[in-house]
Image (cartoon, rainbow, N blue to C red; front, top):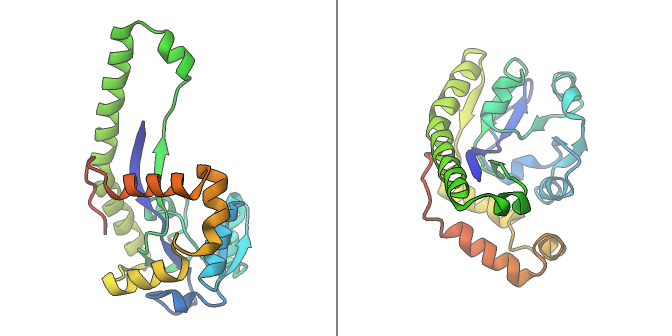
Amino acid sequence: MVCGDRPRVVALRNGLEGPIKTPDQMEGIKFRVPGSKILQQFYRLLGANPTPVAWGETPSAIKQGVADALDPSVEALNVFGFKDVLSWVTFNRSVPDSQVFSCNLEWFKSLPPDIQEGIEFASEVTSLQNLAKVPAARAYAMAELSKAGVQFYAPNEDEMKLWAAKAGHQLPEWDSFKTQLAGSKEAFNKLLDAANNNDGPFVHDV
């Protein structure tokens, strides 16, 4: 089961001029990243300086200027105490984060058919309930961040194309990741088609 629609953002620390509208403005920014090689490459392609910082040390790193920006969802920025250290949040939707819940397939198949059916039904209901709460959770987070003086920017369609052109999946720099994670570029393209033709629930985004 997959739940959630909490896309990552560009959250800029206090003291830096914003908002970040286009990828050209990322040049030289010390961007906090986790250990993810994919995220490090993504921000490198954008011209930023990927700066690995442990999650627990990130608020102080942003406050002290060790890092200039970070990319959690707006809900996470509020929950984990970043509202007093940020100036601008840009909804560039770099990573469509989600939550994945799984169980042991062997165990699941060992269950009686009626129990399997009940688990699948409950999973679908829970997924829909989770998604239904996303807009309210995002609105609450934005309201709380706004109280602290954080401002928000949503790139227009032309600006979003610039982000995709500079660091999108079509670039050859991503080929090794496609092969490593999907098995081949052909398999990746099938997954891409499936993602772009999703007939599932719609979650309103900024």
